[in-house]
Image (cartoon, rainbow, N blue to C red; front, side, top):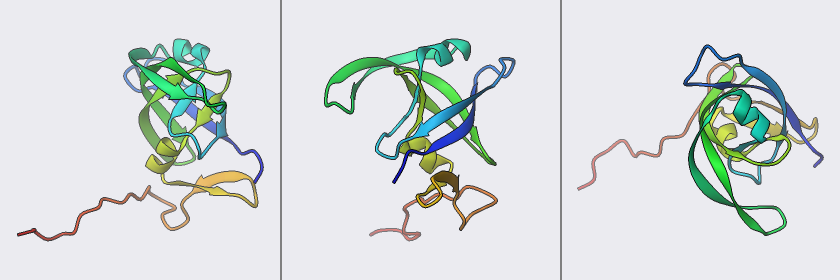
Length: 133
């Protein structure tokens, strides 16, 4: 499979007066979180919640700021999440993709909405629906 990018709109969900920004994100299903460069965090005036340790692709670990709340928009889908601040490009990981119910189309190298739920994101809530004794 080749490299996949997605056009996202990012915003500070706690401050609707700030202008949203359009970004091109590298899509990485091997990564968990949204990752943003420092200049994006500054532009959106995101607050650091805590420091987190991340393991990079080369196996090394480093501590990076975790900022919040970031609103992500893609097609007709939205998610509000935190983001790890590092690197020089936006990276869309698996957690926000799952939250927006997005899928990868390997043949066309693109991200799209789940075709089983094209109008509204679908989620799985694991419950049996009956009381246990």
